[in-house]
Image 1 (cartoon, rainbow, N blue to C red):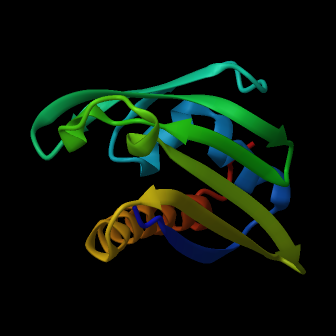
Image 2 (image 1 turned 45 degrees about the vertical axis):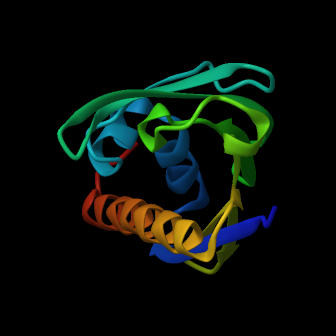
Image 3 (image 1 turned 30 degrees about the vertical axis):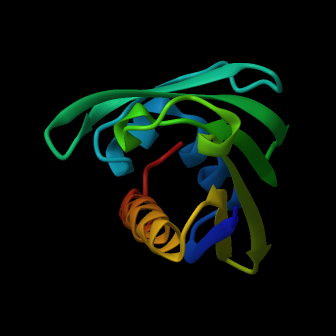
Amino acid sequence: MENYTAVVSTTITTSLAKAWQALIDPRIIKEYMFGTEVVSDWNEGATIIWKGEWQGKPHEDKGVIKKIEPEQLIQYTHFSPLEGKTETVENIHTITITLSSLGNDITVTLSQDNNQTVEARRHSEKNWQMMLDGMKKFLEQSSNLK
């Protein structure tokens, strides 16, 4: 079985602290992640749950935080029943998000492994890029974010 990794990135004019906050603050995540409510205590080994509606269907995705390095990296597993598959190893993705800074710009790079076809990889890249674009727009328009 093939394993195609989706990779997307964006560069945001913001601080590293604000970019990090946007990745772990449920109030901010809801602003750019299609209204999704995220529940987690953001510690390694903790569960993470995404509740929301996607294309008119309610969903509750879940995962586990594998690694977290504040202002640098977060890695977690992700399973979505919306894909119509059972929760087995081959249907669970690992999402890795890294932050890197250069001057006033932060590059956010996201990868998702375990896409079983090129088309699945492209679909994942499209969805994740929309999310990162939303995060960029929110951060660059939120001058009073604390």
